[in-house]
Image 1 (cartoon, one colour):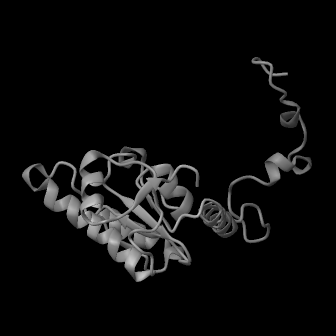
Image 2 (image 1 turned 60 degrees about the vertical axis):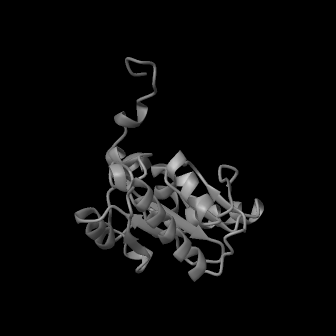
Length: 185
């Protein structure tokens, strides 16, 4: 036992005898180890299964954890829950559409996430837009509506959303988007 009461007998075994040491997070061309393609695929499949279970036509995500789960992208905790990036997962779509912060973050996402296959667009940010906030939040909703329409999702369908602020709620309402609590999925 270690100082804090945790078993550490695995440290005493020879390296070649310890699965914990052999199958680490480090990549290898001669062992399977972690299959990140499978991880991404199964996460997205589970999200789609939950959408079906709860009869959602689409999910709109602003929370960083939900974006990471469905899109498999991460660009730091500082972007979490501040409405500067978002993703849309329409029912029947092969992949979600990620709206990433314009500039170098957008370019890095396009490089880092080839599995999104062209489904990365610039985010429309309304926060800190001051007197242009209403205009910008309407543009953000237009970007979401565009993805919904491209995928044949009716605006009066059951559209789940994970979080929103008053400005985005007002804009979605003005555009006729039927929002419901997306947390069951």
